[in-house]
Image (cartoon, rainbow, N blue to C red):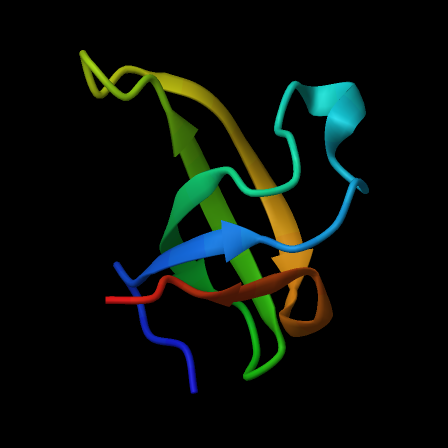
Length: 65
């Protein structure tokens, strides 16, 4: 369902301590398994990475196009 470089939305408050709020848009930068991903949360205006972190499919949803 998800692929590398897809834009996804954070669907949980699990990452608040990392500074990633529910509803934040992230990129999938790596696929560990079909259910685990490495995400990049970046500054919207500059594209600078704020944090890179791991998530599973239950914590994200596809970005509506």
